[in-house]
Length: 340
Image (cartoon, rainbow, N blue to C red; front, side):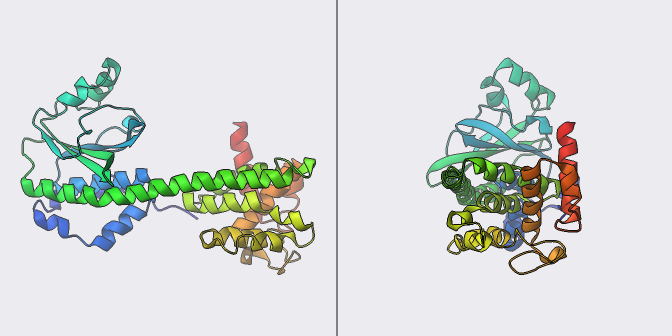
């Protein structure tokens, strides 16, 4: 699976962008599709900057701040990407939009000399006008869009309203994603604790699931799986042997049944069911072969084989027999990269 390249600033026809209230009437399904193409808070904020520049008609640079303890830059538009990840203080604590006629003066005053030099080198010192738009969810400010006009023109009340309405629509979406992230973290912790409790009954198995999960995720990244796909793969790998609590025989089916009431882990359930299938069709439980075996199951089988043997040559010997040769090649790539 290959990712579609992300659009960059040059891909956006800002010169042709509408500059009045009609800009806010764009197809909402298209906007939502663009936002959810990268279903993360960072992805949402990056696309929000691009859309806001479009609404303001061009001649805009900007950055997005996420408020998680410290205020951190999570996306930029027109500014150097070296700013991403930087902790900044600035004029976005108020819960209302602001036009700053002195540009970035407040931003410079709020930060240390070292950060001021970095902001200066990014070209922020001479900004004539800034539009700061908070992004809120349920009465709390979760972030902000800072939009700097790079020309002498102003930002009209109609344009301000369009961007503000856009930011207000983003807040609940970001809140939802943050809640999902918190749920995922809790779910991972609970899953790991349950698996460790089961493994502790058999000393030799202790830590096996964690090792297989780590190896599976590395292979998945090498095969360009998305974040959501890696999440399913992690749960499948962590839980793949849970069925052994009822004995070795038939444990893939037993383990898969544990997830029957978790529809959001349907792909992980399928991966667990089929992780003992073989590339040559001689596996269990359904004698699937080749690419009829779910991809996560094929990745899990290779990771499991490597963790158990610790021997790449033995894993290679099973390519096109028990294991998917493409996944074995991905494992080789991962190991070569780890060796530097």
